[in-house]
Length: 433
Image (tube, rainbow, N blue to C red):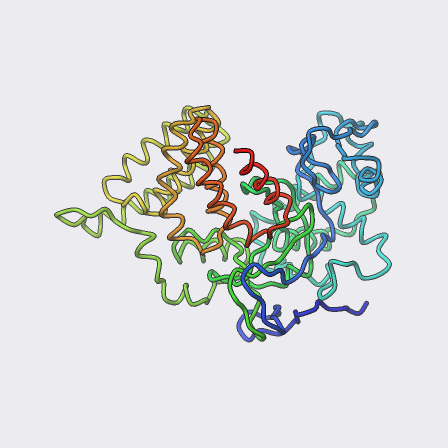
């Protein structure tokens, strides 16, 4: 199958990063480089009933599948459009009942295998790269990840064996590895997880901690937009990770998930690291050993908190956040990224508990540092403004809410485009507010 290409974009061999994409003409901030439908995608099981399984529209009056009574659709057209992949799960969900629990990776792999089986020509998501040619890094998979993949593969066999034939274990390992390296999390305007998808052409885009584009989603389709002016020959670069953290942390995450170190300008200069790891100013400076110990404590606290989320009650989690902030506050500045991280977690817990005043208090501590540490058009910043906008409205603080909403929209009009359903809905809310 021969590729048809994408207007204004070409594949090339980067001397440092391997294959990648670059532009063949100028693109301006906010301009869309290309849109890519998913090769395969899946709605998160937790979002069923809130989104259409096929078009990912967010509605209140969705129609339920009459057989499994688990999947929801806008209308008959969406239900028919989804049947080719939903039929893989529909009968199984009825048969297994509450015991039906494949991982999201297993569900996505099942859909990829089903699509491959019926595919007769190159799909619209493979204009430049075939799904089979996506990087897998299977040779780099460690024992822990291999065990996780084997567990997912076991789930695939358990829940889908009645209606599917599977490749051998080696090929399955490669496919699950491809999904791990190339899968995209589809998120809403507040960065909440909606689903997972594979976009072969988008997967060709290399990473940089100083990205030139951003990927957002319109329904299940991925849209790649410029977040800086680009000239012909510039490489198309996205960030694979959260850019809030210092250089060593970012590269640790890249090595763990994608098996490489970043060599971008920011990683070479570490120009923001001092600010990101800022120490509290005192008449008598904090000793270097104390700073090192506190940074070690902060990183451990963050790691432990991820595990404790599933073990502790919300009230206990909030107490952990408060204790950690008090401990770190003696050494680290309020704008230190580890302090910001714990503040963000505390904000989320407060929202869950209904402590809206405290949620606002934690959220407001993040605004200035986030705006300073993240790139100009960051979804992390826009989503924070949106969270605060909704909190302000709930607390009857209309003026503050409108201001936060305007700040969010000014970012999203670039990252999502002015005609995106999320932006149109926010524009409508602004008029009503």
